[in-house]
Length: 88
Image 1: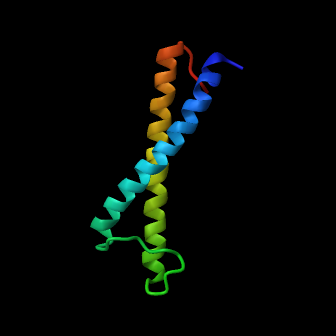
Image 2: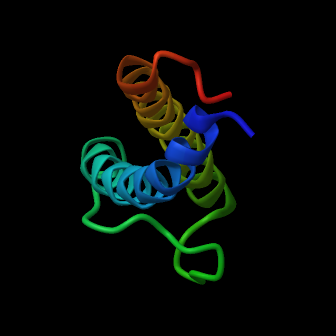
């Protein structure tokens, strides 16, 4: 196993937690704007319709994927700067 992979493993775990928290915060702010409500609906929220629930889930998924990709890419780039090799 390359040294960069070994270095990246714990870094990747920390970055995963950070990206999840960051994505959650971003989604909450985005939902306030597009959903006109403080909280996004849960799938089992009886008061909310299918359309709103599915839109909220799609927006949340897109935000989580984009934030995770950006954070992972930044982490890999940093590991390459530190070790000289790409961790992938």
